[in-house]
Length: 218
Image 1 (cartoon, rainbow, N blue to C red):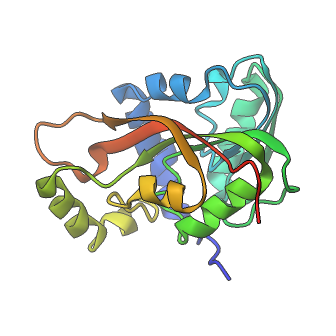
Image 2 (tube, rainbow, N blue to C red):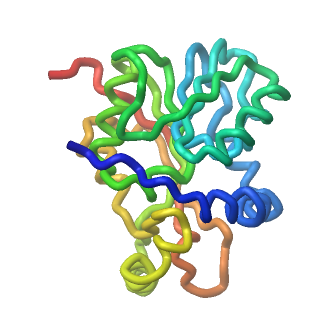
């Protein structure tokens, strides 16, 4: 069975107080906007954190369910939901055990989540399960670099203290391959360097894009 995500209260406090606001100051909001634009119907956001993306969802989203395993971040998300322009339901849960019926959502959104789940394949299988056949997955995720030099930096970081300091994050996962292995069809994506550092920084390599769930499942 897949392993449930461990609670990381120290990281949650660090993210809420420092890392999250730092991302916002660095300009991550432009990617949150692109991640959510033109979505319609019922949407699930996996690993919503403090709810920083809620304000960007368009009015065409009739219902947003946001799952977050960390209690502190979930409380922040509940506060953000009150001010959101759409209906938001914040619940406890993690990517590998999504409490939802099969074929329920029109779209699923992940942002800096697939890097930290213990079992990426199990998480993507759950995302596929709760999506309607042909439904949309929007993602903004750390990814293995195309640069051999940066890949070496990523491997070194992931094998040492980086996951311990950053909530289980693994910067060098081959998430593009994981998506296709899970049966998703990549419809569009681009590689993004954020923050764009002048040296090989392991967490700068991202992918931003859209994939569709299989029309039929076994």
